[in-house]
Amino acid sequence: MIFKTLLAAAAVTSMAVPALAQNDPIELSSQIQLVQPSDDGDTLVSPDSVVPGDTLVFQTSYSNRTGETVTDFVVATPVPPSVTLTMRSAANLDVSVDGGTGWGQLADLTVEEETETRAATADDVTHVRWIIAEMAPDAEGTVQYRAIVK
Image 1 (cartoon, rainbow, N blue to C red):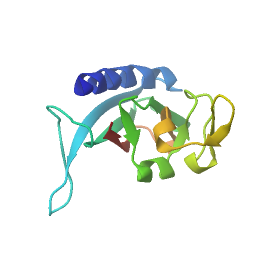
Image 2: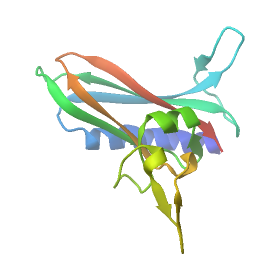
Image 3: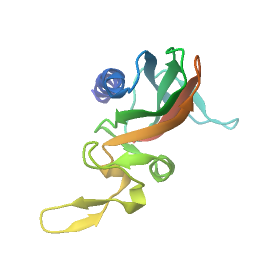
Image 4: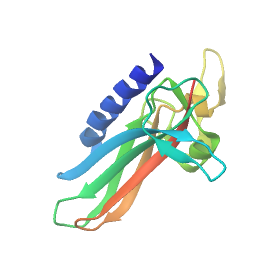
């Protein structure tokens, strides 16, 4: 069930990211890979299934097919509710804890609860984004984050 939720989230991500693309035709695609740790380093594989505690890598690839240089291109993607960003990803990304309305570094964000405000945690992150400062014609790249299955 968790894996199907993640696949559905990936499908939503691949649909949602183009909607946030500022210039067409920027091509975007996404995939989810399972991290398999080994003595020789991590290996990324296509998951057949996942269980709580597994680490996943969510990748979005982009390519500029506009024929022009694109500046300040934003790639934003929702974080599926069935995962939590790893601390490293949470600390290094521009994140939102309010559905994509506000953005910042996790350490600077807060969450409103019934009667109080508290510091946001990696579990509160709803979206991540990257701003590609400049993308030349035919440029390609990949952005990614790691998350742990709840």
